[in-house]
Image 1 (cartoon, rainbow, N blue to C red):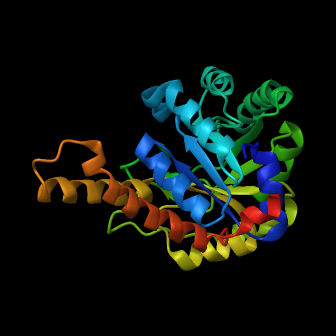
Image 2 (spheres, rainbow, N blue to C red):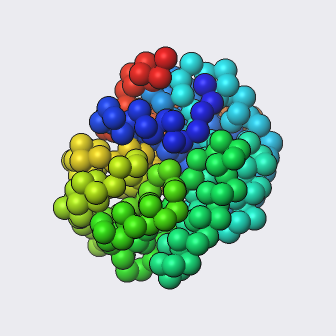
Length: 288
């Protein structure tokens, strides 16, 4: 069941769960995410960053659309961290049902203006829009990027931003970072800031950099009101660590059907754990 983000997250926002958004960089990751989401009867967001989109091209998008339409669960196809109008247009033309415009590193007024432009472009095509206010940190091992110093989302500014732009979902900065945290780097999530934002902003809130954070903090963020959580590094680490293990144990393997099944299983395990953590298990039933 293919749908847009606004309709998907409206249900999550009302029912106290978060929909996982998994970055899909290959057909094998697509299989793992869809198989486990269906098994868990959970709604899911399939997303690509601009660099991932440029790598896999439109053919994988066609596969995503095919999987979404034949599935009994709700599926959104989302552009993650789109940084310019051209990549947003490409995503919409390719069949994405949701796009993110990330102008969070720009001055506030510029962020408002470019977000308004994307909303005006996307909404007539029934494509929802996510934007970001504040900045997400970076661990140095993620293609999604980020900034060295996190700028936390200001709750009052969030109200103004939503009113001026008409955006459908808002990614907030409360201390997460993209990628896998090094041993000497620990996230400090400002759940107090999240609560203030939730008290003032009615649209669904998004948490980026969801990999490698403490489960109890993520669970609390969902309880407060996060409706979408982005996961990229965690599923890729599980997949490719198992892939290396299989190849090292079987140096003669060359067929994908020999190499990938165990990696898909390892990835599915992480996907399932995230679905449970976000309280999304069996929530697909709410959309029928």
